[in-house]
Length: 446
Image 1 (spheres, one colour):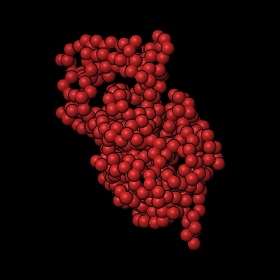
Image 2 (image 1 turned 90 degrees about the vertical axis):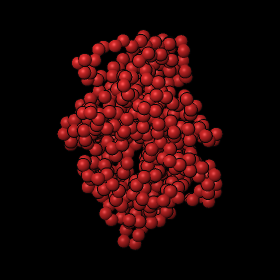
Image 3 (image 1 turned 45 degrees about the vertical axis):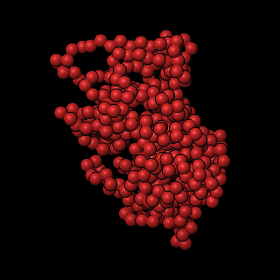
Image 4 (image 1 turned 135 degrees about the vertical axis):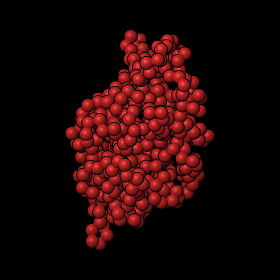
C-alpha cells in the first residue's frame, strides 16, 4: 500500500481544543476513473518560460507526467522583443512591410514552445493577442502595469479586433503550418487550440459577435492545416459568464460560421474560468471557495443542458482562489503558506464531485500559477515557486500526480457537505476530508 497524506495546516487560537475526525476510505467502492485534471498550468507571461527559474519549473511540472502536462499562456502573438514584464509578454511574430504585406518571425515563439516540449510539457495554445500592425486601436500598445495600479490599465492595443479578418486568419494559418512543419502532425494533434482569453470582459474590446467572427476565422485557419487538431473555447470568465457560454455553444451548433458561411463551428473541448474571492476579515484572510465552485457548478449546468456537448471534454482554463496572479495585497497573503495548498486540495476534490453530479466530462482544471523571475523571494504573487524554491502548493500537485486508477468513496465526519460549501463556503467549522484512489493493490489517499 502506498499513501499520501496532506493536512490542512492552520494557525489555531490557543483556546481552540483539538478535535477528532473519523475518515473512512472504502477501497471496495469505486466511482469511476480518477481523471488527472491537475495536469494543466498557465501564466500571463510567456517569456518567463525560457528564463532560468521558469524553465526549471517547467521541467519539474513535466516530470510529474511527462508528455501529459499542458501549459497555457497569454500574449503569444503580441508585438515586442520578448522582454518580460508583469502581465505582459511578446514574441514579435507579426509585422507588415511598407506596402502592408505580412512579415512573420517565429524565433521567440519557437524558443517558448521548444522549451516547453523539451521539458515534457505540451502547449495549450491560446491564439492571441492582437499584433500591433493588425489592431484597430494600436496606440497605446504595451502597457506598464505594476501591482497597485488599476487593473484596467492593462487593456491597451493588443485587446482590440483586427483591421482585416483575412490577415488574422492567415496569421493563424501560418502559425499552425509552422508548428506542424517544426514539430510534426502527431505532436501538434495532441495540443489544445483556443482563441483569446475571457472575451466577455475587457480582455476583448470588441463585441460578442466580433469575437465569434475572430474565433471562427482562427479555428478555420488551424483546421485548414490540420483537420484533426483539437480546437475549442471560449475560455470565458466567471463560469458561464452570464449567457456568454450558452450563446457561444449555440453559435457553434446552430450559427452561421463567419469564416465558412456554413452552419456550425467545430468544438472538441469546452473551456471556461472559475475563481474564488478571498478578502481580509477580522485580521485574517477569509478564502472564497464558494465563488469558485459556484462558477464551476453553473458552467457545468449550462453545458449539461446541451445533449450534443454532454460528453464533450471540458477544461477549466483558469481555476484559482482569485483572479490576479501578479497582484499583491493583504487579502492575498495566503499564497506563501499552507492555506494555498489546503485550499487547492479541497477545491480539486470538489471539482471531481461536481463533475459526477452533472455527468459531464471534465479532463482538466488549469492552475494559473507559475513563477516570476527576477522578483524578490516570496513577494506575494500567486506562484508555484519563488526563485527556484517550491511553495507548499507545489507538493499538492506532486501528490495528485501519483494518484492513479479508480476514485474511491470516502466518508468523513469532518467534511463540510458540498451543497453547504456552494451556499456559504467553509464557515464556523473546519473542513477535513480526503480524496482517495486505488490502482491495483495500491491505495492513494490525499
